[in-house]
Image (cartoon, rainbow, N blue to C red; front, side, top):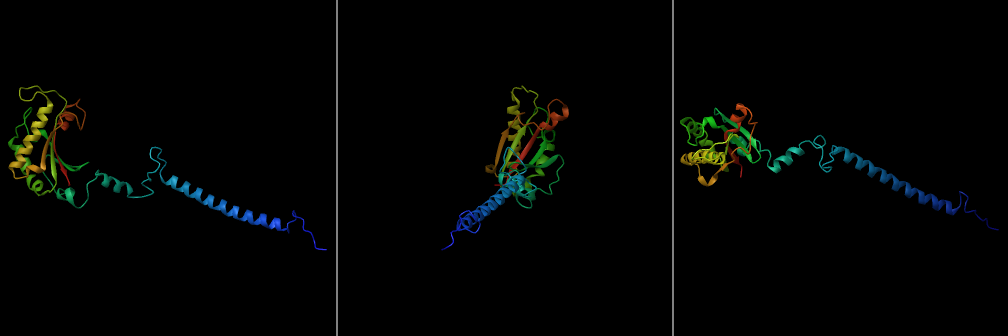
Length: 219
């Protein structure tokens, strides 16, 4: 008589099938464990920024933040374009700074104008004349932007700082065109006191806010 195997005994066919089933389940759990570990590592590399969990942390991807800024136009390129053209600029009273659109030349108003006036002084013309060669060689567009402090002005010619800041920007633009810079590359903008650099509570702060800025767009 043939032996009858107990289905519950370890040597039975059912036990063997159950063993095979458990083996693939174990492999599946191993894969899940690896995936969970991978996700934990990726989350830790984001730096835990709750506002933007998909943004990698700078330490995890060095240089990625700088690339993003350059693509957004926050930082001008190094070694060419606007930055290279003005690296060696040395004009008293003119500050070279980065700008969201490229490069900016900042000039204090006392170098260009008398108080409450939009007529360029001889010193102002001399200051601008030192910039014209580089500005003429620059191929992009240039915004001439006038800024004032918050103290009100009321004259027959300039009823407010809007008119004064716009007139000063226009005066600088006219001088640049007289020096041979293509007028189609220029535009004049008056901001009055809407974009201060410092507080208007002190004389030093107000002096910082009164300025003309030449914003160079590296088109």
